[in-house]
Length: 554
Image 1 (cartoon, rainbow, N blue to C red):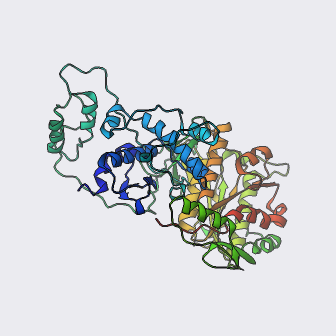
Image 2: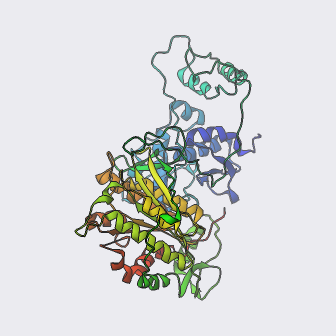
Image 3: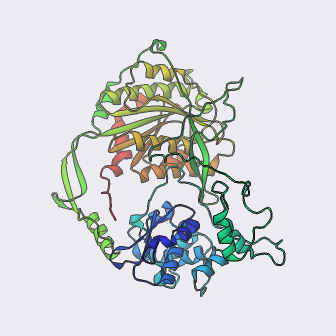
């Protein structure tokens, strides 16, 4: 790498951000910024200035300053983004250890005025005077940053260069020792590389320092092929105890998802593990067919038909005011978007994918005065909805879920996208038995990922059949409600609507509205009671995703 190659700072950027990042030159000399995966530096500046730009942008990523909920609040508000950058960059830099600040030659002219990213955003929204950021802070471009979090993107590693207190006279400096440890790897081992850097720093390896096996010689290392972007972990085989409950899931299989901690106002990365629990049944196990609901079919046939207004089109019938405002803001921010500023009215073909998620937790065993359980009503509703939507030509999937602790959220595939519901679908539904608990956030995130990667339609809807009450030991009350709401927010961020139908349960409607929103739920004793307005419920959940924004290139 040469002095004109921005990747000479890649090791520093990856270390501070806690993730793999690329570096590149910004176009037309625009200020330094990041997209979350790439940090763009200002060409033509000195090495010291570019190193400062890398340090600031990478520190923002590592400190969680550019997490989706924060970035979403900055969209279309350049003045707020600048005030937030001035506060949050100083806070992120203040968290860095002294050796990093000295190596980056950062001036220490001011201290952090806030303790968290949320506090920085709150102060930036207020009227308190905020000093302008220096030019090497760069800028924040919310339009280039992701605004949703689905699955755990990987643990964010924060640099820890704190020195131990038991250093002996004559030893190398603790900060240098830990920096040298970065070049140790028991799998690449002839130790030539680590000894070279240790020798350059004038130190020796401390006894007991480094990971286990650092002194051993490894002759070969096998490298596997990189997994594709749509790869999912292998299914985990579940062992069952005598009482029918799943035993502890061992190994690293299953899909891992984060969980939102409302008390700490941050995600718990890799906190929940969702595993597939196969459900098998033969077609002749079905005794009764699925009763038709003509009113339901007529109402659902209205969804997705008729004239629609498509926004952000390259040409059309009239100007799109909101698109014009976005274009103006982007141009003033130094970004050159496509000129899609028109509205077009035309009849759009039906293009809908629905995943029906059945709550199979123990709370569904409650019975009504007629002797029917909540699970019975939900199971029959799932079959009727699946058959009706399939007849209308929609892509439909049916899954059931329950949880037995955060390490065993069980997701059962009743019907996959592309399969016929036929007779096997109802048979598998009849085989599902309620039990366990309702860790709703993890179930919604897993279902949302299936919709996002497998539905193959422009309009996508998660239809949840549940009492809507998230509950498990250690997952209840405000914590569980906030995590469920956050999971729904993540789905909306990728254009997936969500509708909860609570059938036969007595869940408080205020709780349902807190979690799902005023237009995101409906309650009734049976599905037939909701049939007259099922189209309104579907459209209310899908309306804000009818015209997705065009993909932006940079």
